[in-house]
Length: 320
Image (cartoon, rainbow, N blue to C red; front, side, top):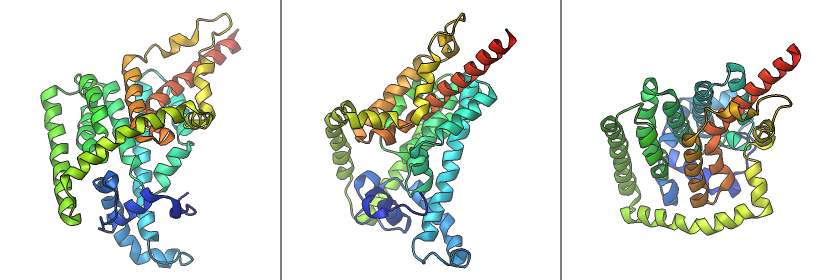
């Protein structure tokens, strides 16, 4: 993906590459303020540019060092998100083996490959969702993850406001509301500073951001019709591939055993409401598969419990 991707049909990747070079002209308002990943990629690429041609002489000069900077940054962010999935799954009762298999399964998704291999910022928002779920599942000792999610969230994606109510309510046991307010204020102040700098640099007005945000509501009808189509259903099922079938198959009652539904007793209202938040992202975005991958923290927990259940079931069968 990193080496062979065709940038000619991807406006998003070209926008972020342009932003990483300090240019905000011709960049859509939707992308213009997501500066953290492009800035980090540019910082990583700066020293790499001096040695890149010597290491990879077959690749022409130009954007290759910057693309490699995005590649390194995004791989690290996706890896950090996967670490949150693993520990989140452990906190819902999965074994270490089950959790490890689950995150490996989820990393085979094409959306994980996109997030890690391309000059995009999806990896950071995926990490925000992962930190949020992990912090809520871990409790008070996971308050650092909640603080990180509240600070990074506003800078990662404008639709963070959809996740915010869930995070504030279920995160109150990890971090009191006054402390959450302080962390969120830090993120909002940083976002305001980014808006001021970018608007001044590009000559944009603040009203463009509001107009752009409202335009996303026009995607709801399109998203619903797409999800109801055969192609849309295929796109939804392809988010996690064949592993999507593992959880419903596991729910089938075991022969002469307690119904395996009890294996998922640790999952509940938190996961259901977070799935609704993901669904809202899908509706407003119109990109069903890409936004649907934000459910990875929840699905990894369910899949880890599935693998844990299968292992216990097979152990019982061998002991009979």
